[in-house]
Length: 102
Image (cartoon, rainbow, N blue to C red; front, side, top):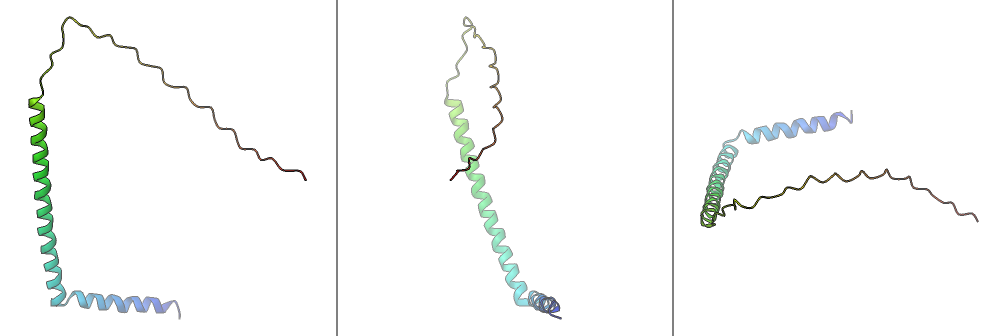
């Protein structure tokens, strides 16, 4: 009988929650909250877009202001061969314990 008590209590709380959500007051509150969230999301989206546009404008301006360096035709670059990968580490040795003799 004791395991049935939480089940019955859950049914009662669920029924009360559904009845509360179906009321007009709850519907109005949920609709108002949804409209506030939508307006906040729109505001955040517009601020992110404006920040991105200003960042892109700065990047474009700095890229166009930078002088273009032409490579020298007389110089030839020498490429070094790729270095060998480092050797693998040796596996760890297990720790040994020393027992004290009294």
